[in-house]
Image 1 (cartoon, chains in turn brown, cyan):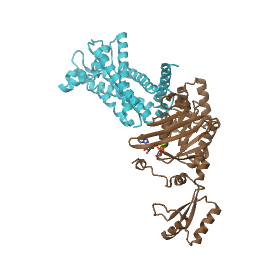
Image 2 (cartoon, rainbow over the protein chains, first blue to last red; image 1 turned 45 degrees about the vertical axis):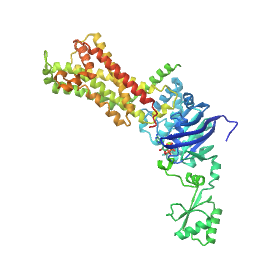
Image 3 (cartoon, chains in turn cyan, blue; image 1 turned 30 degrees about the horizontal axis):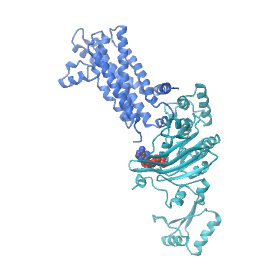
Image 4 (cartoon, rainbow over the protein chains, first blue to last red; image 1 turned 120 degrees about the vertical axis):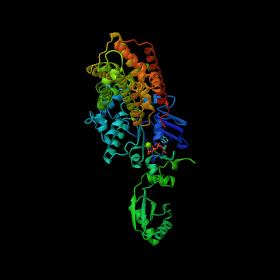
Length: 324
Length: 263
Ligand SMILES: Nc1ncnc2c1ncn2[C@@H]1O[C@H](COP(=O)(O)OP(=O)(O)OP(=O)(O)O)[C@@H](O)[C@H]1O
Ligand SMILES: [Mg+2]
């Protein structure tokens, strides 16, 4: 896990946090080298936002230590704050102010002199495609523009570490791609990025390392390639005409049917390549099992979860997460 | 920069932000300003003739009543204006921008001081407008320059105190609606005091409340200063109440602001 040539941007050890009796983060250890992109991947309610809130000094952990750029987030919070930029999951722009005024406000709060503040504001408006809308109140911005403004506001102070909590949730595919490009440009400038997402594809596109968060624990960690190797190419879903065929296929292929048992479908890990598909169908043919239909899935968060925990992505009800 | 210089600079930034809000959200400001003006016109033109006659003493009638009612109207102006404070504080707290401020290396208190300074300035402007309208409808004060200065001082002190109280109410409110409802009580207080009729015309229980509630000595002092009549002990009591309300509001606000806001 160590990466000697790089200094450490974020170091987390033994982090715990509960809300009431609900354990949200249950002993997290993370290490993010400077200048890399780290992605925390997890479904709703996994604890991603809680994690970002602790790392960005917004809330406190119950136990464990967190250092950002070498500073402790509790005892040295102001030093940490001076080094980070945060774009939370929910919009944090001032609706009454225009895009330009929002950025100018951030510049003033970073104590930049007027000329420098203006320069950075203009530069960010340009870079984020907001120059035209700069003089409109943020309340009139579209979701994508608002997200970009939100991100730009976190960048005014030239942060060394940037936290992005689900930066592309709710964006259309094109805006999502724009956002990815923005993140790549930032990495090019040498900043460290800590990003949460629900999409494996996004983590795959952007991250150097990914940690999979499930019910407050890191259940898998590694490079995108390492994680995907655990779900080679996703799975093939087979549909059958009746339960008898389903059971026969399950026996031949040695996979368990979905626990619900109502669907007549079987999920077979595999990369969906032509050769492996043919082999799969040949085996079923040899056992004279009739297949009704078939779909190939490229890996998504569900598959990674399935591979790592042996269960589908858990529900988001608090009960599901509550420790007994 | 020293901590204090930093706090001053950030507070100035937050003040600018708040003043921008006022210009963007003019309809709210105008609405808050309309209430005391409507009260003024209502009490002067609809009720003033009769109420003025009931004041006792010299001339009576509408002319006397305008002079009597202005302090009450001024307090209603302040109470209405701080309702705006409470709403904008709650808007900040329920919106995401507060989380952003908390992750920045700024003087934490500046968020609140920005609100307070902006609200005080705004309210003083509204008071000037309301006084202007009062003069138009026949208000004839009889005060020396020194007394006008004292009027300005007391109005500022009262505004400052109620603004801090409203900031606390905005922090205490879980929703923006609650934040807009809580200060409504303040708007009613001048009515249950010596704002619109002398307290000795009220039934016993109410009269007792009216005489001892904080707005009455403030209104009596303003009346005395504006009309050139004696003030007596009311001046000291009024300032005392301002200090108590300001300190209580500040203390309450500070406690709410520093609590762990993760519910
Ligand atoms: N302020 C709070 N009070 C009580 N429980 C909370 C609070 N904030 C979060 N939780 C609980 O903590 C758990 C993790 O929440 P968190 O917001 O960190 O998840 P998340 O991974 O960000 O989810 P999402 O993808 O939906 O944003 C959830 O079960 C949630 O109910
Ligand atoms: Mg979240």
